[in-house]
Length: 198
Image (cartoon, rainbow, N blue to C red; front, top):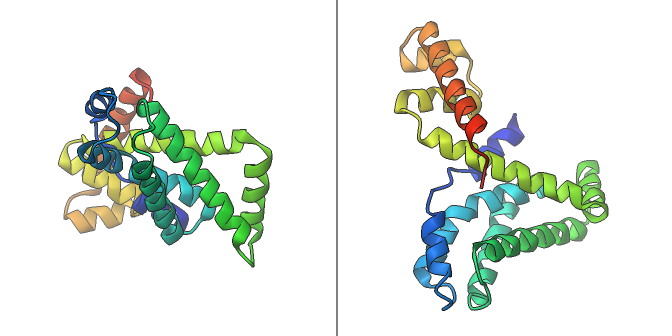
């Protein structure tokens, strides 16, 4: 549960400005400060979460994600679209995370396994990228839920509270909490059944 809490703090909602970013990237003049800010707003937390899955270190994940965006800014004239920026970010994040794991003097068994899998199979990294993108998509949908339903969903799945604890915290019946949870899950199922993450 602690890992989930760390992941939740590193992963926030994805805003829906990809069209705006694409338009700004298509002008062939490199990445403007405004476009960079939108890219940062849209991709910082997903990159942070991706690195966290490899390092299991929240501070290191945030540092690496920040460094990756510094590299994007340094190379801002060399990108020809959103796909190239995303590919650059994930590759830079993966390499920095693996370098961090290699540089650790004392590695846990889990870190050693991650390092081995990361170096010997691209499927492992691809799975982590897909997990990050799916969770980003889900959090985006959660942000659009009605406020009370979103609150119950977050208390259950981010904070790990029980139905009873939530009913006491929100001063409502346990049945109301269960109803809100059911509605939230139904909303998610509906959107996941009709759309796929970008």
